Length: 106
Image 1 (spheres, rainbow, N blue to C red):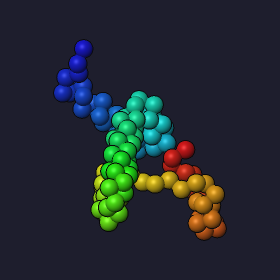
Image 2 (tube, rainbow, N blue to C red; image 1 turned 180 degrees about the vertical axis):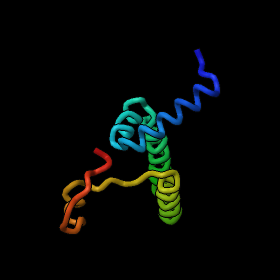
Image 3 (cartoon, rainbow, N blue to C red; image 1 turned 90 degrees about the vertical axis):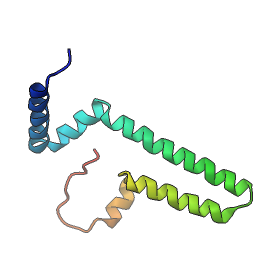
């Protein structure tokens, strides 16, 4: 049974309040509900298409165009919100000493 507009707005307000009160729980819930899965698939699709174009252009002997496609692929990924995650060892080296904040991705 679909929700009417009033119920939908109450649900949206409840979700916003939950996210404000406990952001880590809201992120975990969002991932578990599959909202992040669709976005991950889109990022993967962009990366695979870009990689196939790059390999094809190199195979055709066009390294300049392959570089342009590489830069465009990275630009599109960054433009849609993709953020590369560094390995924990590198993040530890780059983090200045002092109190640490918890990692939002975990």
